Length: 300
Image (cartoon, rainbow, N blue to C red; front, top):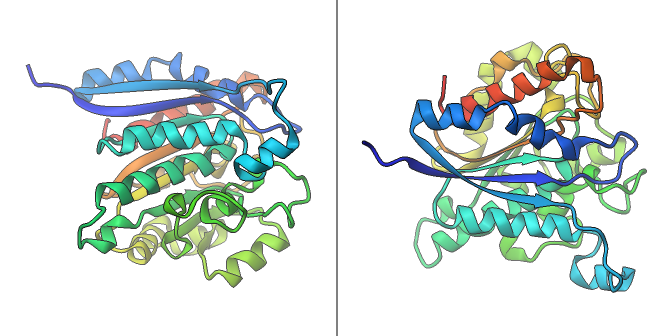
């Protein structure tokens, strides 16, 4: 019998406070489908899971202490970064199921730090730099100064890249190796930040005009042929016809058939499945999420 190939999973029952709570229940909805048992059987993969839950603030959790520990970034997101780092530094593919997209500040920084540590002291400079595909209807690059809501789920890219005051430099992603796919609902302040920092961005209009094949080719060309990639996938980038149970659906989304694998994919996030929204059609959203996971892991 072949020894199972080890992969790692991080289940994040964590969601930022928002007008449409419930994303913290998304991981359980995915787990209950049995998709991971199916993957283990079909592909001979063993997935070692960490389960993280939001921890209520303790009596000594003050605003001053929060600023001292990393500005506005929650302790929960820092725990996500640490968990992903511990798995990724062992060379494992890391799948993180959220939760809302605020956890993305933790997932991509954990992978970025692990990759740098793996190649520390080597001459392969290109491979030390993580590439990120942020597949989302929203840019999530507001800073605390530009955000109208003040909620972390609209700021993870800013925190992960250092535009906001976190994390340490060794964890930060490089916006020159970052690509948006599927943008449809972007604040004016975010558009200015994207332009100022020359972030490669493809809107859903670009996808519809050029086709997902050309968009993906352009994205991978921008990241570079040997660049390890972390794909952070918000389910709201799918057409609401296929994934209605998400906190912030926007029409004309990225259809299921348009997701393609990259040979350099080393980590995947799946976030924003919300069982409290359109519960009568939750199965559609959960099935869409399961298909995305199986595609990333090469399971038919």
